[in-house]
Image 1 (tube, rainbow, N blue to C red):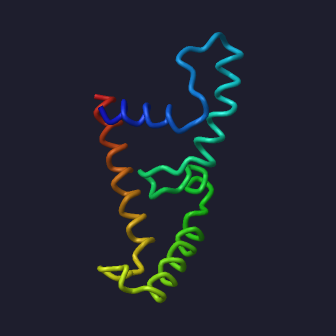
Image 2: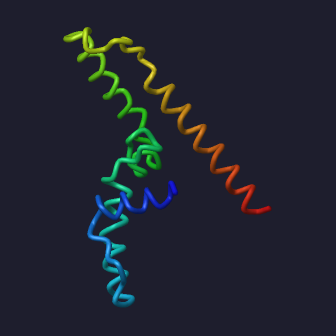
Length: 114
């Protein structure tokens, strides 16, 4: 069910996903638009709303530092909006999330292999 939801979500938010491809060139044209969008523009919840390119090319630490600076500035201006405060753990939470994703991927691979 989760995969169905993800596919439906991508279909509704990404480049115009056809119900059917009219042929090889139609499929190729779609993929040439879809994959750059998916890898470079679409922010994935499973990787803390970074793009796959951000993760692959190692841009996450710099982006996390920028996010943390924005959070710290917002907290300094309006601390009442942050009931739990700002803990400065964005990098640690991202690492924990990625570790959980790796474990899930390893379990899925192990189960598929048999």
